[in-house]
Length: 277
Image (tube, rainbow, N blue to C red; front, side, top):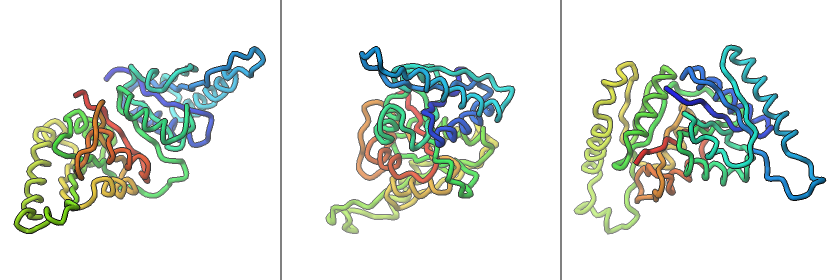
């Protein structure tokens, strides 16, 4: 595995939670940790306070915190003007605090990062979230889920030493005419969903024999199902690739309506895995 683990900080207490996660991920992957601070663009006023000073203090504090957690871990810092996605071009993984104020409002930053980052992104929950979590990674799968997303979910489960629950959810059509028994049969849809899920996972148990796998098919709104899992799962994985849009009521591997809803309402750590296609 090559690259580095990148954590973006902004000086807030919650950002140190992302440093905690980033340090743990770097140790799992045996990769160096890079901590970055995105300084605001300085106005053309020679008397304006330079943002570099506060940024360097933030970086120093974050690096000291990471060093206390992992004294032997290679740690570097970088202060820059730009975007987290540009700086993470060569990163293996990018971590952000869920309520960070970096470069804009939380919603716009997370959405922009999820849509444009070339590497997987983990949105870390606030440090006050101390509820017990099930030792499993959850990944939402539909008929368009790229194998890269599944690969990331298996890798995370293997690195953490936990199981993987692959879930496919669907909601009944809202059009009453479609729910007519002659045109819509729930048992048939459930069987087809089970087949879709099993076919998506073909070959992965062989590649990761030590990862217990649970296949789950459920009748529920996909976003609601993922949000509910985010309350207790160790990590929930959703997919994203450029140019995607939502499709009906199924899991959307693009960051469409389902992905955006999950990011807005998630109750725990969410990973956005990049599709190469």
